[in-house]
Image (cartoon, rainbow, N blue to C red; front, side, top):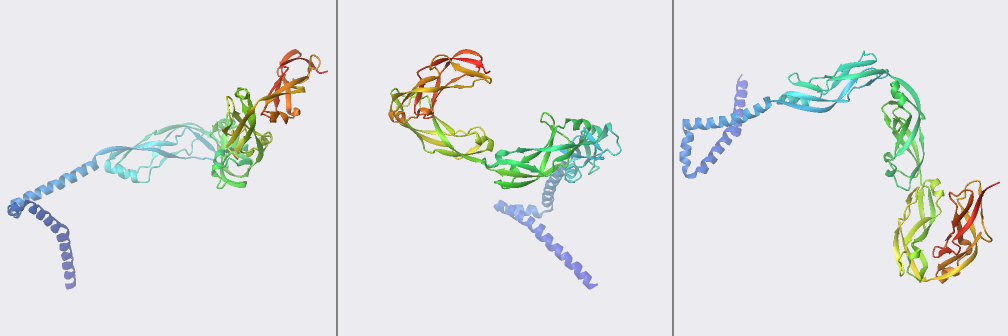
Amino acid sequence: MNKIFRSIGHLFKVIGRFIDKKIVLPITKFFVGISNKFKGNGRSFERILTRKPGLIIVSLLVALGVFFIADSKTTSLIETSAEVLYDQPISATYNEEAYVVEGLPETVDITLIGRKSDVYLAKQLPTNDITVDLTGLEPGVHKVNLKYKKALSSVEYKLDPSVATIVIYEKVSAEKEVNYEVINKDKIDSKLMVEDVTLDTERVYVKGNEATLNEVASVKALIDLKNLVDPQVGEQELKDVKLVAYDSDGKKVNAEIVPSKISATVKITSPQKEVPIRVIPRNYDDIVFGKAISSITPDITQVTIYGESDKLEDISYIPVYVDVGDLKEDKEFSITIDRPSGVRAISATSVKVNVTLGDETTKEFDDIYLEYENLGDGLSAQTVGENSNRVTVSVKGVQSVLSNLDPTTIKAYVDLKGLGVGQHEVTVQVSGSDLRGKYSSKTTKVTLRITEKN
């Protein structure tokens, strides 16, 4: 019994020390501090605090302060407020294997109305489930109510929308062939390209209502190159490749595809070809009078191009155009190399071309055979007049260029594009493989007759 009393006494001592330390001592320090502020009036202030009326007034002021603080907090908690939860997902229950449901919104907005404390609590509770039970409904048009699982009965809930008009169809399926489309080609090195893609399945099932299935013209596996971990030459496997259904206009069709994702093996290659650079002067005739190009030398003579193999086969050189119009003295040009169509990358993007000038002279080359270009199918052409199928070509350039010029590299021709049976006068055109010379025909026009072949 004594032990119990001792324990109770010890408990009260602990409580007394706690009150003394946490309440009495801080309040005493507070009032001592106020007393020190009054200095000379300290005794008067002390007398006020030691008298009963003074203590009552101070206690009343403290109580009023605590009351107003507590009252403001309480008022804010009991005030009515409203908050909106936007884009809350809807969960529908029905036989997804047998039916297709259209018209059901994907999300709704929920307005919570009630005391601020209750609304705050309702937002924290993980019960934001909006459900609609379609079990037992037959194919056709139906109006259904959307239901929300209330977290607190003291809070009013309003759904927007709260009712949905839906259409239920019987689900049908059709087998479709799968093709592929490579996307995000710019996400890998431009020197690389996808040569082939092998899908792990060639056919899939498309499911939906009959009208939707009739819209589906193709199913494509989207080979997204940004999903490749380390793109390089060789084969790489892509998993979870997305399948998408399209109509005949290339628009997406919202249809179920089974399976929805497949795997694919992507074969990456880097076709390339080395080709020479061919510098082509422009506005040659505008060079200062009496001067011609002595040399036109690029600092690189060939480049490596990358692209599709069939495109590269048609490219024999890379043209680089240099504008030499109004050129009066030797000059170095810095030219950007343009990528031809079908070329994805090129080993050099620019070239420096050094052009030197010399004194211009002229040399003539006789008996250059006249060629016909763009003659229509089933037609033949013949020049009118003696030796009219041969012309004399005049070439202007520096002496060193003309002395080494091979006449077989000179081409004289007429363009017969669009000309039919009959007699025509056409202009003679001349070109040469050495672009340091300026070529012209002394015979500017010839007359020829076009006939049908026998």
